[in-house]
Length: 291
Ligand code: ZN
Image 1 (cartoon, protein in one colour):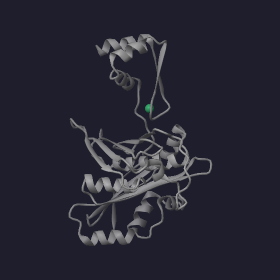
Image 2 (tube, protein in one colour):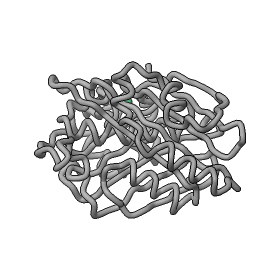
Image 3 (spheres, protein in one colour):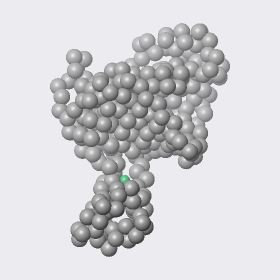
Image 4 (tube, protein in one colour):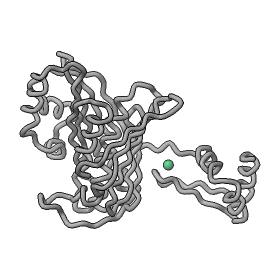
């Protein structure tokens, strides 16, 4: 289970949330068998999605993050429900790149910088909310910050980290998001800047045994924080045979008719290891539904 907390400052000028997403990213690596740099890219996006999902108000709301910068990893997608339960997908799970000049996994090199980060929020309205921003660095945290600044006009500090072990499993993953609330005074901005100047990386704090609660307090020592909520999000896929049938209904009669000639059709979920098998008869029934 992951662990996610959300706080508001008692002076009501800012909010902060933090997550230990180690288990979520651990599961993602096991499912997609990603190389180290791809685990970092997908893990950071999953971590951001989980926090953004947990901030949604409606029970049925969800958020989808998609980043594609033209790099070797292709599109990276992360989806979260309103409890922070996340799932993800990456076009190219295995990309090998040398470490960057800081000696870190080269997430920017894998994602690329020529493209967009798109955020789609399904808030139960007729049309989903869609915001899209040009990629800033491809390191993902800065891109999330830019999304909030440009699309939602919310001054935001975002930090995300994934530490990959030598056996490629995930040692630690997590992040935090600080956001100014409307009418926050300049003093709050100055105080936040002072606070975040010399903080250790999220994965360092998690490796030191700190909880998301500890991280929020460590990051904002100048603020008194009041807990809004805490939750235990996980890697969760919501696929089902019924949803797969609905997806098949969208491929078109012609395609379905050619599928019906096969003895069986196997549909694999993009987000989890589940496979759904349809016989020719099953497909013919779906064609009847589609008519
Ligand atoms: Zn699935």
